[in-house]
Amino acid sequence: MTKGRTIAIGDTKVVPGRRHRFDIPVARLPTGSMLGMPVAVLNGRGDGPTVWLSGAIHGDELNGVEIIREVLPRIDVRTLRGAIIATPVVNVFGFIDQSRYLPDGRDLNRFFPGSTRGSLASRLAKIFMTEVVAQSDLGIDLHTAAGHRTNIPQVRGDLDHPETLRLSNAFGAPFIIDARLRDGSLRMAATKRQVPVLLYEAGQINRFDTDAVQYGVEGVLRVLQAMEMGTWELPRIRRRPIRLDSTRWVRARRSGIAKLDVALGDQVVRGELLGTISDAFGQRPTRITAANSGYVIAITQHPLVSQGDALVHIGQVQGGGA
Image (cartoon, rainbow, N blue to C red):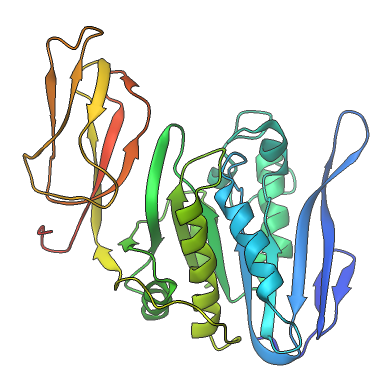
């Protein structure tokens, strides 16, 4: 818990009651210029927890950047209890290149907790763990779907952890998902250090999704409020989040042109027709059917598909019913 303490990141110190924006040095470019990770520290006057907000761990996932841009102006450090460490662009290399990956093709979210002697991804992960995670009590990591997919707003986390479950519900997204940990992910590395993480997934890459951003802004503020860090005027949660305990992708059985007849949030039953895949003339259609009952939480937006491509992501409630 932050007890009126000074937050120190690198050579920068932020005293209670102040907000400060600066860069964490990351690496030198081939030109010799230093590239930095932008960070803002909002250090409240009152005692409370420290929460980090992170966006663009994948450089093409922009909704998280906008969420943080809209959240920070609403925080008054004079009344804030605790501290917020905001890093809207973690993967600065991918962000500049409009790419999910780092220049060497590595996925940053597979290299945590990182190393000072490893690859660029590993070194960047180590910086984030040392400067941000190590002094936080909770993380809110903001993502979108990958590639040509789009996600309905959802919060993923360890829902067997009581506090994670409470805060996931407080966020107010349509769905909360009990998600397994991935090796090398920020969430796994932070969890091993006893720092819980809420992973917010919504929208698609390389653009702002208005609904995804709105859910994210309100959700972050609701979590901070649930942690008694402050109070904000927020609309009521539209509906109680639906808990999903497993998810499964429906994949293309053949290559062709896919036409989906379902939308995000739709409730489906096993065997239900979700769409078809056909040739360029619309002939020889192949049915796309639900492999299980549940709710549609992600779909592809690219009509040209190859055999095995992920098409529709279905989340299942505990016990297999929808």
